[in-house]
Image 1 (cartoon, one colour):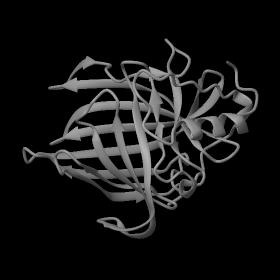
Image 2 (cartoon, one colour; image 1 turned 180 degrees about the horizontal axis):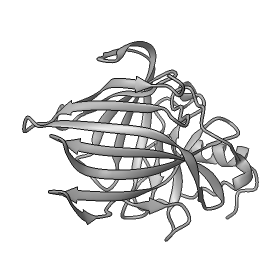
Image 3 (cartoon, helix red, strand yellow; image 1 turned 180 degrees about the vertical axis):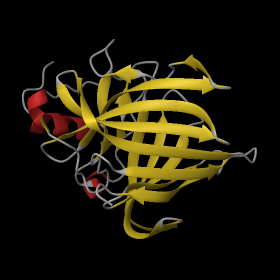
Image 4 (cartoon, helix red, strand yellow; image 1 turned 90 degrees about the horizontal axis):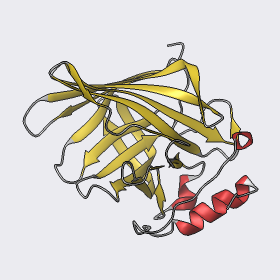
Length: 238
């Protein structure tokens, strides 16, 4: 069923996601290119070309994981929508483990949608797979919301962040919008806290923390206790 107005789409999605959908329940959204705007400037998920983030985590085995993120100037067409490109490189003890290009777009209401990703996974410097890759409009994959325009209006709702049946079914839930969090980069108030999980992977249970004007500042794996923290952030023009 084609949803004719984006307002109805958002209402339908929110109503359907006030609880965690069962794996057998259908997830259907159908925004059109006209529903989106150029660029992504959501305060809690700003993706301005030239912005860079660096995160670090100490893994269970004692190795250090470093995540380097940059917003590219070029864009990508995803199912007719002009998407912002986020380049994400993950290193463990200096060795590249994952190289990803994620695609995002913001709708007219200010919600940020996740449209897909291209993934290269490495072992010992060798490309071994593209596991985790998906794209809206390809093989039935659908976009999901990565950050609401007004997170406070969606407290305790479960919603899809991405949907590629049997391959990528990550979900989120806003738990709080008033956290105070300190990371190596700095101290923040009015932080949005989410619970991220997957209907496919019971080991994916983590909290993420989003600060205004910066985006993700911290992640906590609820299974292992590992923490990923922001150590550097560079705004465009800095």
